[in-house]
Length: 432
Image 1 (cartoon, rainbow, N blue to C red):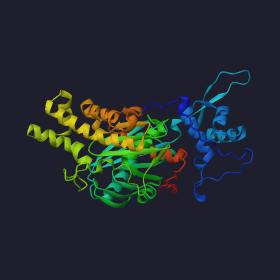
Image 2 (tube, rainbow, N blue to C red):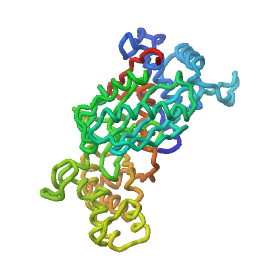
Image 3 (tube, rainbow, N blue to C red):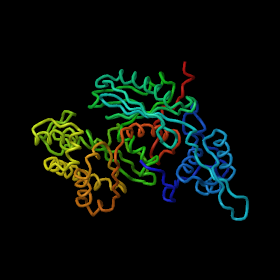
Image 4 (cartoon, rainbow, N blue to C red):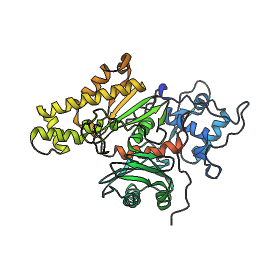
């Protein structure tokens, strides 16, 4: 994830529904009547999205880009200025009349919490509206087979992180949670996670009761795609894929600016395609999955066999950095296998952008170069030569920041053309 792109290509092309425009009647919020709010109004969301992508920007330019009338824009901007979401940041050069005042979003107008769950613990971050981290907390606790322990740990770490960040609770928009598995994001339920050994684990509802905050839950790799779309390398992209490499191999797929989840939330389980029938056993219980061949555990095992000893993750990275011959051979072979699978995915989906991320990027060029080479050379009709490939070096809290952007997306962004909000938006009363 990088600084925001303010180029014209990044600007939204969505047009507003204007109650003051010709032939239009008032538009009711898409959320249920009992949970309507200013932030969920479609025109408000549109203007926030335009300012976020294109700001600083004038009211006149907002009206031009949105298709809304000047009175409608002025009314909404006034409300957002009053609530502190918009701020006036500068004055643009005048063409003869009064110089236009430029608008931007105040990053401190609200805060979000993001949590990444692992088998051995969780990472929690507090972010502002620009997805910048204000506080990070780490907790070690066994969560394998124990969703109740996860709920208790999330509650504790959320409160701890808010104290560390020293932000007003009244400005907290909600909590986003990312974890490995097949997630029903509309209900906030983990249907299945082989890494955590969970089935039908309800997270959102009990946490919402405990925290008195809205809660969103999604697959962790999908949250990375949401983060890239919010403020990262995919800000202006319409069709892109995030490929996470590490212990697991996963995809976050965005089609026509909408996150693709699949019929039951299981899209993107790229590492569990069987590519070698009868091959090594995967953690999911099947044999020959891509993840069992090129995931981090497989690489450590194969390098360890070459050296006659167990190899830790840090040792694997050190051997690769030092140019150890046996390690480089293993990484090259795995990179080519992964690259062929990725090339097939590019042929299937034809994305404009491929973002490679995850802990596996720490292995560097010996592992990643064969992946990119295969994408360039092994796709149909040179599709792989047309896709832009970006590799992102990794930080420990990126997963949690991805989860935090779930809240930002649901609070401020317009859904894509075929996408409905998955918010659990009823905000309970004051915390007791």
